[in-house]
Image (cartoon, rainbow, N blue to C red; front, side, top):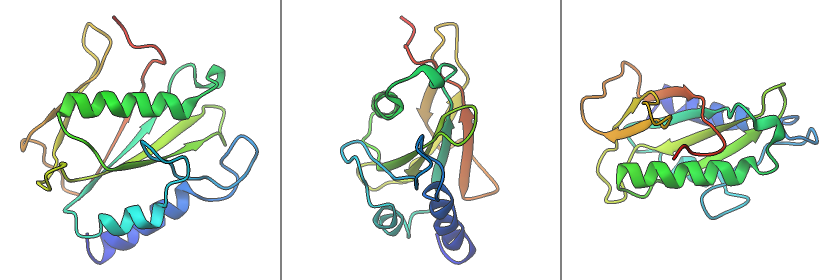
Length: 157
C-alpha cells in the first residue's frame, strides 16, 4: 500500500486506538491472536507493501452481555483461519463507545506463505455460520475491503 492508501491505513489505526473507546473510556488497545497488547504500528509496517488488507467489524447481537469480547474475537478468527486453511496476521480493537459493543479487525492481505489473500464472504447459510472462501474472484475498486457481519456468540451446531 503506497501513497494515499498508506496514509489511510495509518489514519484508520489512529481511529481504532483513539481515546474513549474502552468500557472505562480509555484509549483503544490493539490485540492479536497471541498478544493482549499488540503493536499496531508494527502491524501496519509489516503490511506496508501488501496489495490490500481486509477490515471487518464484528458486532455480536449479545455483545452487551458478553464478558469476553476479546476471547470471542480470537475464537472467530481461529475459525476463519480454519475455513481459509491458512494462518492470518491480524489485529483487533474492541470498541465499547456505542450502545452496541463491537470489534474492529484488520487482516493483512497475505497468506502464511506470502501469496496474496483474497476472501469471498458468503452470508450465513442454513447452519447459521458465515462461509469464508479464498479465491481470486473477489474484485474491489478499492484496495481495502470492508465487510460488516453480525455473528452469534455461540456457534451453531
